[in-house]
Length: 280
Image (cartoon, rainbow, N blue to C red; front, side, top):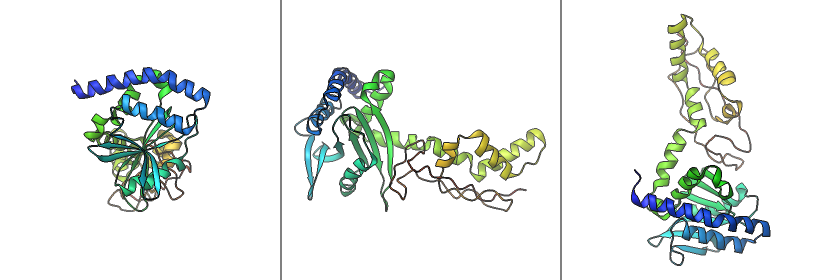
């Protein structure tokens, strides 16, 4: 059974979604501007996610000569910056880049982009350039289709969860089980060699690693997933190798696009096949 604080938080979020669903729908119909949308967002942060309105939700948070739309605080420390756009706006990747520098300056790994209806959470990792990954993408007006999933994701942004850093646990599990990660493991030298041994055990046939790789790549895995596995080693050629050269982190690529947990991005990067493996 979930802890009582989690049960209370999720009950609060469910109640908030029921109350704000009609408000969001009407606001979108009437074309609320960014300022009015920000009012709705701050009410959801307060009533749904549990942040104190006057002490833990700061609008127009100043960072040098710039201002973040909303800063969420716990115990006086900023935890998440929120970028708010007018409801009904088409949220673009460039929008999250506006708060990337704010988050980086405060060493904050989580960023939130929303227009009141759509809520997108991003993870910002350290490095040069920093990697930006989409954690989850919610449509509050579609919450009725999968209410438990929406509540679970919003809970990760709640005061209770952020205080306990639960979103980090969610992120690590999601990253480890993403189609891109699993697909990358499936095309690794070690797994291909294991498949070769199992095929030989079952059929008596000595199949080359390159043939196994091609079957996995062209007949087992989906094309979009194969293309998303970037920075793969070279294709098996029969030469000896000590295995995979490691996994690729989903991140913003050189053109600035953001990858999601399914490995897709706007550029559709192609993968390079795995390194040579021992055919013995």
